[in-house]
Image (cartoon, rainbow, N blue to C red):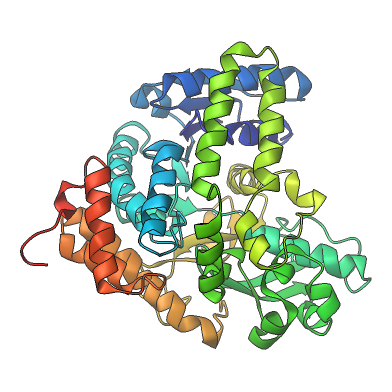
Length: 463
């Protein structure tokens, strides 16, 4: 099979390459195409892959190109992981938001709106290219904000598009491991990706806005065993982030990104006090890596050291709010999105069932949302495609957050498609982490002044 990665010069591409190289299935990816508009980044990542290849069992052939039609022609899967404006734009988004006293995080924060406004037009162009050059390819979207971008793509490509995130399965893995370590779960549980019927996850929400409400193993829901033990709750990452009292009150374990909602004031204060918020840290780190790569022989080793630092500092400000705890060793191996992407391709190409938490069209799964709304829920994946599992449980306390966030997402999409400043203002005004209409106007004005292509959103007399 052929796999095309859009954003092929991205820092995390080697994680996908390593996952593909360890795949021993009959229908595996034998050709990996890397597409990027940045020639230097593409060359650096190609060097990393060439140095990793001899250490791996079945590395696919790699083709790097800056020509989109060449990258897409006759491909089987497209993995979209683009970042319009790069990490520098992410740092600017965050800095602008913090100047106006609101959280700027690139998905749940107001920075995510800026990111989407400049990213959607590029994604629409990619959609047209896929329709022309890869009309039968399946598309796996990891481009943030993932829920927005997946919904945009699905409007034109339908169910061939699925969105992925590594947070839900990482959460489930940590809970299962915690229960196993306490002898409260079977020790022989297979991979959480297996579709053999032993493990079922109950999870519902939107991307970066969901809750795990059940973890069933061999027909028994093990989550109550965790909720009965405050010591166990506070022994894994999300439990330490939120604290046992909140998790027990919710009767569910929140996705880590919900920390920005439950601890908005504390997270904002920590970001304001930080010498380098996450966006600025990554921008500087990526600049050092790509800048030094030309002068380093062991560029794969440099990449690995940089990756480890990136994982160690993931959500560092949130962990500072919750007690400055270090990440567990198992969480430093990889973010996990590479494994989710591979699991989807493996299940479809080899018709080997898997159960995954994915971003798919709602179609009645969550009663408060319409059928076309992209939601994050458990799905079964096999040779026939992706099938949402019935009756996901959205906690009562989460309904308002989810409905509001989907309204904001819809206004963002309308703002771009209809060239509407009003819709962009409505998105920012109703955003859960923006606390003033005046702040919403100021944010949109500064976004429009800072980034090219946002002329539609400049201030008018109608404001």
